[in-house]
Length: 193
Image 1: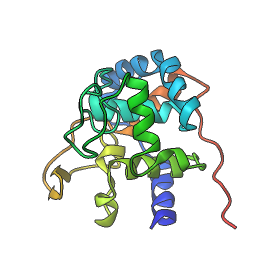
Image 2 (image 1 turned 90 degrees about the horizontal axis):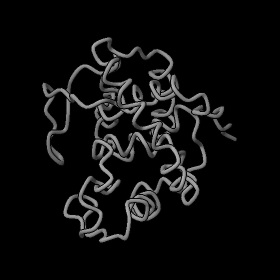
Image 3 (image 1 turned 30 degrees about the horizontal axis):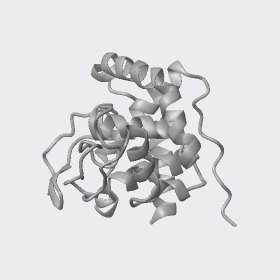
Image 4 (image 1 turned 120 degrees about the vertical axis):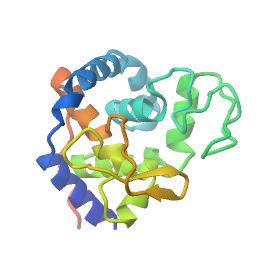
């Protein structure tokens, strides 16, 4: 499934258009995420996960709250209760973020392919592959773009085909951040031997 999902996500990325109603809020959020680049780069240095990927996870999981764990949005200075549960407490947001990327599934720290299709697939795996199993675009990635219409897991294991994800999707956030910071770029796809 991974190669198929990477190809599907790459095709969606290349075809994607941000829905006009979301452009103003995306610009505001993208500015906020790019402004925190140095803090995200600290975690990137420890994990090798690109800083801009960490930034969009932070936005999706907790609206960029520095008091919330990157793993699931619970307070990082307390033991987490949501999946992954039992994590922490930690000494800092950075320590919690490193734990989330190194010691929690899908273990993003071990990934080496950060091309567009792969990065979007890693982000999708971070949230869960339930949408891929249904052959649907994940709202975690595609909300606020023309690649997503409806359908959302409203609770763990409970899918509602009529629910709509109103959060900003990772792809739209990445595209908006790229417009502000030219250093944000996906490398060429890794060749499969």
